[in-house]
Amino acid sequence: MRKIKKVCVLVCLLLALFCSVGEAFQPSKRWIWLGSDDTIGSWFDPKSMTEIRMPGDYRVFMWVLFYKNAPSESLTKVRFYVDLKAQTLGVSDRIVYDMEGNSLGSEHYPASSVRMVVSPESRGETLYRIAKMYHAKRAARRSIPKRV
Image (cartoon, rainbow, N blue to C red; front, side, top):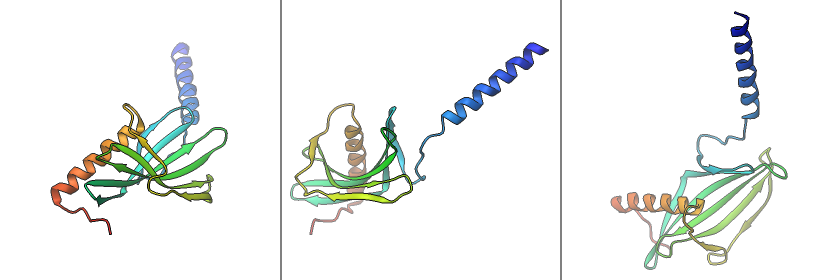
């Protein structure tokens, strides 16, 4: 009987340890998890997705949230756009926040200044696939606005 009590106490202590260590940053339910590692996590906001018809192409815009815990905690929201034809990912806006939600600075980038090729097995590829699905869904409903 003593052995069972010791095992129960040990299990409870281990669970308490893992629960307290496992507490991590979690954004609101609006954000969908993309991936994470030891120092950074990323989520995207499906409600922020928009699409613009460009000459001969489409661009899908979405906001992505990055939580960074090293060297200090911070949040960064980045507005990406995905060029579906060129298979590139670009950045249009970036806002950095402290953990209380105060803006520490923001930047707006011209449309062609920050672009990268979508590489296989990356978060960029995940964003590209999300954008393709969003485009296909909207194209089926024929509800894509033209660029003004």
